[in-house]
Image (cartoon, rainbow, N blue to C red; front, side):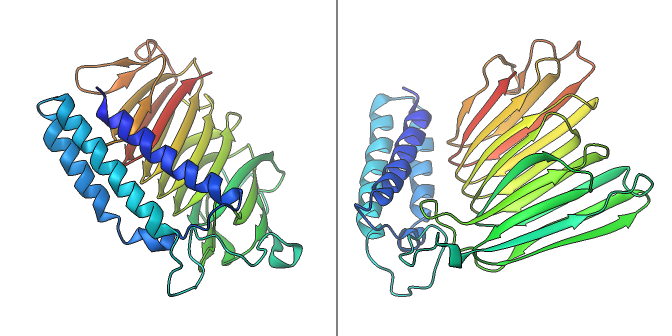
Length: 310
């Protein structure tokens, strides 16, 4: 019995069920009320590790039973209104956050110059934000923001033909998966060689880099949903993803050889078309022969990692 997959599936069902009940206004769930109980998941992981050594079905059932009881307790606790009603990530807010008067439209842009932007490094930080790559621009970068909370800024420091861009959000996000948060539509120039570094808490990322010269993509985040597509315009692309509880989907071209290294705890993995090696890494059949290579490092707790070839 693959206890890790069952545990991950139960956690996903719990989160999805709570969000669905919220969306239908059946319950009001306050994630802040249950967050302080996060050490319970360390206990569950410890129980699973102890019993997994002997690979007994009894041990697996004990781990699953402890998880179900814990989630039931959190389900009851999460419906209790917190004493401090200050907005918090994940809380369902009853103040019509989606109305026209509750968000502000912002626009950021940096010009492109061939002599000053042979390479561009984009640093993104913040939380409670949905990021979407909408395509190319004649500028170096364009960012259209629908802001409901926080303060956004864009800075560009140019040194030795390298543009170092910093796009960040400061302040409380007020983000709720049911009510929506900040939305950012990005457009990038296709001429430079890009590196993208993201550090965020809760949020969503939908990037299609298939037509960009992307040298590296680094993501460090918490409760996030990532759907990233990569291309084969450079000989080497490095992808590093570190998450807490996340759904990560990575799409890579079949012409590129790919190697995956994982440190994923109780996470689920789906690497269709890869071969698992003795050292625990995964490789595509064309890894050795391909002149284009993609290196992926995945590090997560209770996450779902999926890598597909297109």
